[in-house]
Length: 112
Image (cartoon, rainbow, N blue to C red):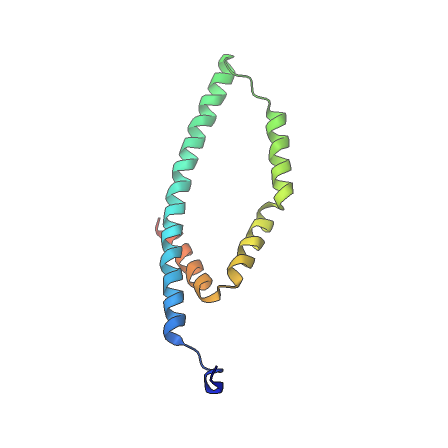
């Protein structure tokens, strides 16, 4: 490697990585928000149907078992904080792409 190039930054490469990250982040954020909306509507429909079937006596739900399974899964992965720390650690090695992705993701969530 040329000693004169050690302190130099390739701005074209850095800009390309950041803009690619922003574009991908926007697409993922936009799609994620739409998918979350659809998922929440479906979840609400299933919950209302489940409660209605339970009230009519067609279905018996063991809520204690469901709560126990939820608590076990959340404690196992460290909750939302553990998930976010893991996600941030993975993107730390890709700072230009990660920063652009983060900005694009937030814009996509806002627009979607």
